[in-house]
Length: 338
Image (cartoon, rainbow, N blue to C red; front, side, top):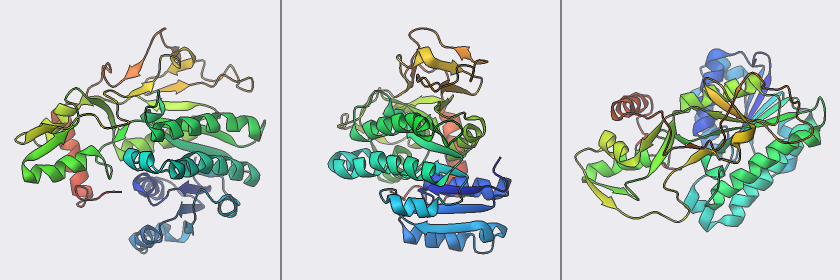
């Protein structure tokens, strides 16, 4: 699918972008692979990482911000596929800097859509989050808006034009700034902080996230929101896996935080199809072809895909093995923060 294609990744030097690039240069033969980001240091580090790699000749590095539509248009000329991963994603930072979150996560999404249509891009897939479902914080609200924009972007591109879809998934295991690196750091002091012992979360690895995005790019018609089937875990099981001998201090739920996350809300279930490895939320718009995804299984009325009721659970042993694998691949994982 990606062979001989020109691919651009917004946020290409972030956690997802780096793993996506690693996967693409290993498994495909793109014509060109463009990293679009605003961090010159991370681009420099990525350039050094691939300096002796066979893929170096196809890799390009664009300094730019998704807030800058003209720069996006310049970067997307001749591009076939865009993966939109750029975002402000730290919940407290978005709460404290709401205007900045809106400029990047919402207006930036508009710029990506407009630039992709203007430049004749074939497919655009945006990364979303479980925080977009029934949002209680600004980050989730911006991701909900971005999802709506990427669904309806298909109406703006018209028949045969650029196709837009989204991939919505949960917390990435050991991503920078997340709870796992925090616990790994805190266990050295013998005390870990937990906001609420009842809390549950969906979990996915970076590798699984990249594989899911590649699958969605392959099968998308335009307008779908793709949701993977992934396990959930209670926060105290997470503590048991990482710091079983540590004291646990309960700090209370923070502003904008939920006890349990939801990947498919009850109001979305009636236009969602289930498949062995994922769910596909279909758009409710006149331009959508009703025959798309008919081979899936309709969900029952009242279905909710919640981390609390999810039948697939991530065991303590499985998480420990996962962290060991990730730790050997990324030795600075525990100390990094975005």
